[in-house]
Length: 87
Image 1 (tube, rainbow, N blue to C red):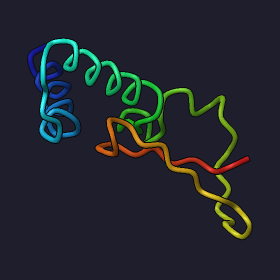
Image 2: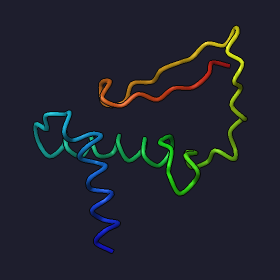
Image 3: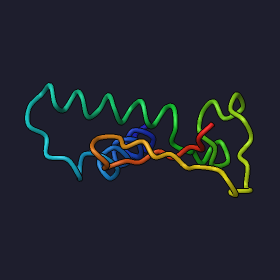
């Protein structure tokens, strides 16, 4: 079980905490909550063949980019970015 915990803690540190100066407990809670939401809803996972959770309910990605607009959502002030196609 330690290997799984160390992997998650390492991901949190590398992707979020190493890039943000934590000011107090409330700020730490906000940063961890935002990262948790990103990790569980958007981030691709190796165990799911690099697909995010819930990818089965989302439309299939279109590789033809002519006329498609890509939207970026900044998480934690731009530390993490999420991308999706505009409708």
